[in-house]
Image 1: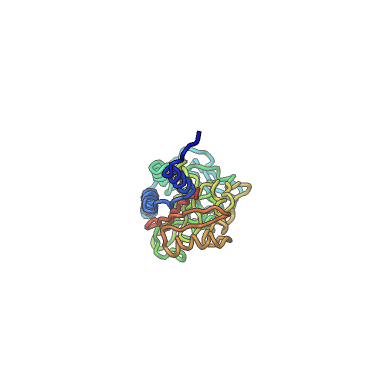
Image 2: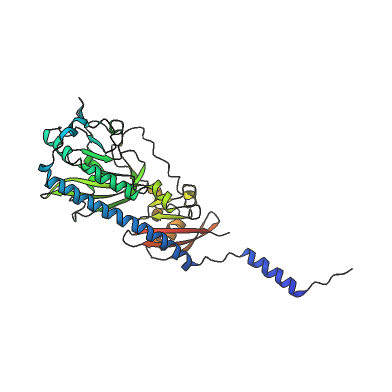
Amino acid sequence: MRFRTCPGFILLIILFSLSSCHFSKPDVDKELAGLQKTGDIIQNDFQNIIKETKNLVYFTESLYRFHYNYYPGKDTLKYELKPNGIFYNPTDDGGSAVFVSGHYPVTKNLKDIVYFTAPLDSFFIKDIKKNSPLITQAHFNERHSYLRIYPYIDVLNQFDPKQNIIAYNLYFLADNEHNPSKKAVMIDHPYVDPAGRGWIISSIAPVYNKHILEGVVGIDITIESMKKKYMSATSSDIMLLDSSGVVIMIDEQKAGIFEMPHIKSHKYLESIKSNEYIGDEYNLLSSKNKTIRDAFTELMRDKKTSTEVTIEDNKYFLISYMIPGLNWYIVKFIKEN
């Protein structure tokens, strides 16, 4: 028996074959709308963090202005001065950890500063709980290498005697030289937290008393806490970059797509004595791969909302949205199937 094939049927098969091999470009407008929604959440969260940083400044400055009204009472008994010069509170009572390194002599005046800034604990606790789990810790870094930090940490294992606390970026980036406007500023280039929380970014602001920089307050956010809030199984194909092209957040398993090494957890084998930022290999505007470098230059320098890039024979569509105010970029990457 001979079968006759319908020409229309053959045409349908051909069209189906062609369409199954063709990958249509993503709907840029639709993808941008999704990125904007995530961007609005991030913007709102960090605007609140910056606002809380400013409130923390006002509260700390008020402690200095009215410190003569504060009477520590029995609270002075919870601190201990060690032979190596460290002044600290050895017991976790649910409040902050205190570490005065001894880099400057622990005088009666310095002890009094520790005492009258103790009410910061209540502000820290309220701040952490309000914004949990995004905010990891809050702290006050005083100019005589006195640190008050919440939640409590084992300061003796984390810091060295005589350590100069104000040598860290979370202090000097808020001083008059680096921050003459005296406003809250973001350290959005990920760096290793000296207090042991791993890779973080921070909102910091100076505390002045009669034109004297008394210290710097800070609120820290770990990169891991950002991933947990902003990335899910359905949005692991996004990354967050700062204005210089440095990756703030990316799914670790997908970092290799853009020829970046995995962002490993920092191991605290010794105390952090200097500022350790994430490396240049995580800056996509200076990638060693010209194709990658050019693609992100189009998005971030030329302000394009989308582009294409081929990496190791795999083609990706990149869609970009800049978060207003923060000048961060959310980039979604979609692999051609």
